[in-house]
Length: 190
Ligand SMILES: Nc1nc2c(ncn2[C@@H]2O[C@H](COP(=O)(O)OP(=O)(O)OP(=O)(O)O)[C@@H](O)[C@H]2O)c(=O)[nH]1
Image (cartoon, rainbow, N blue to C red):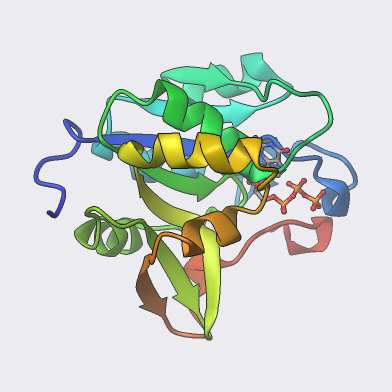
């Protein structure tokens, strides 16, 4: 069941809730890359796809607000990891599918998003590069929320392990596909 008509069927969460230790503790989504905050690059790519654009952030809410329809924070102050942000987004998503992207991948483009969305259906979709899953480039059916809640209660905190339990469809990307590259340390900023 491919997604027929975004934005009627797609919510999006941009994950910006991490510690950013490799970035010196700075808030990665707000760091400037090629003259603009990284979150702005992602916003431009996903804005046409949804009327439900969620940013998961744990600080600097005012700075993120222009790039989202809604902001959410983790319900814990100890940085439980990206799965916490995805869980919170699934809880409030207004549409049947949730596109997940990290805030530090400003090279994401519409072609990559179209390829991910083309695979959306009952199973989750994850990008794969060089044989490795890329769990933060994913499309998740919101119907999987009860499964995530159960896994969360059981102590699951790994996005990849949780998604793999649902026989994800793989979007196979080439090893040199830079659109999936994270700008997660200061020397990668341009
Ligand atoms: N909501 C939420 N998102 C997170 C959390 N930890 C990481 N993320 C997001 O998940 C993505 C991948 O995060 P990482 O690069 O592995 O972790 P990070 O904390 O951002 O950075 P490092 O401290 O340098 O590892 C980024 O988009 C983060 O913003 C968290 O505890 N909560």
